[in-house]
Image 1: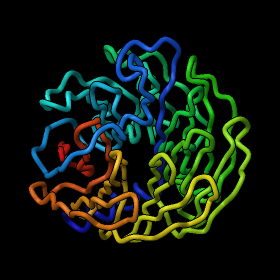
Image 2: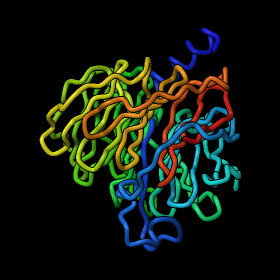
Image 3: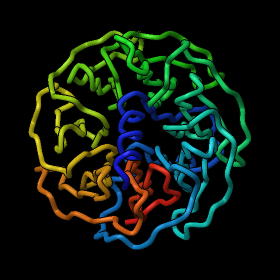
Length: 331
């Protein structure tokens, strides 16, 4: 990848933030029609994986989410999201989002998209991609990450170099902004563990633990300049400085630091393993129980790639190629 493009992407990555969403009463599709908990669906699947194929989606694929049936990919340069059938790679639709969509998540019936240059989030109906609303965030928010706590959407606002970023809480049913809490400099990732929210604050070199009911910060843990966040059912995983860090959610204690590429960004849990996307075009698979590296997969068929988003669909792991690419890899 040319140095000037990598430098430009580096600036974008250090300045913006992405969230994860899930929610809505009487959902229409996906795992919410099953008695299984969507957050635990990954634990039902065990498999051996290799890079099997790549699919063309949109321009600049970044954050990804699984709705129980299909994958949704935010296309940064396309100002839209792609709905993809993961088993075949068939594009089921491309739907308008906002300005520079960066992160995406599912709430049980709808897909939420954080638009990093629009200071807003877009809500789309997962069944047909219809836009149900666009909801404003504070001026200069630059939303970078998104998550769902069962009732509300939480959006991490990177703040584009401001002294402090923030996190905004919106009610999932109608998108009402419930409040915004200040964080440290350049927050970049978020995950919900069923009780608390965890937010990576890259500029402060910490991960913050928040109470969802009121946004109260319960604890901060020094971990270094972290980026992505994922939950494995018991532990929080963070990408940071060529490593992933494992933190026990219940006690907030750091359990270990494990190697994972040169510049790890997105990560996801598959029920047994943690998958990490490295912006230098490799994917690392680690055993969640002890952090042992089980495999490293190179994605060298796309010179425009800068790997970013990761999502597990119950059978396979998808990784978005980021940058000016238009591809998603399937493992």
